[in-house]
Image 1: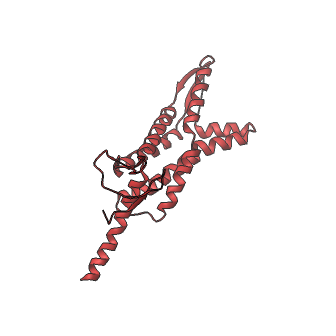
Image 2: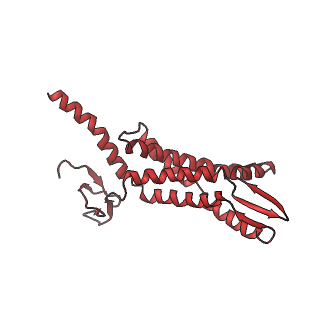
Image 3: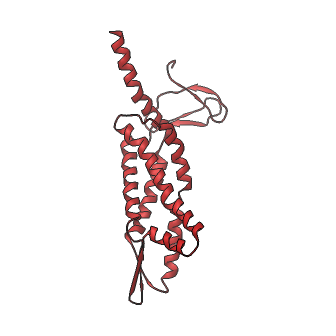
Length: 215
């Protein structure tokens, strides 16, 4: 196909023309056989819905109590921000800062970058700083350690079970749902599919202008 774009094999650097793929199909290098790209695994609407769900779970997880402790008739409960503040007040500001960055700031940046990329494309517009969002999202994902935080909370609650009656709060379940949502977005997110959507959107005005000038 003369008009199709070229793609370089990441293993042997062979330049090849991209070809249309059937649903669920994949293209392989003609020289070394490595997988080059696959057909779209999901539509933009699926990724937008998952990103919106991740945002909702994040807001719930950071606004409601993580767990409630019943210590001899005295109830104690706290949110994630309350726990970070408690660690800070104990003089461990480095730990408090690390928890703040990895459980709040990084997920916010990741969700915001994903929404900035996906929502405009879903609505038929190409965001101006699409390439910047592409670089920011994976960096924020690498810094997000919500799953590690959840593991630490689970271990702590199990150990506290011998000293107090532990009642898991809604934020605890929301953190679990947040992890599932972000993981699913990462699995379904295909940069090539996003760029194809962006190129298709940006080519429409050019085609219209060309058609008007030809009249």
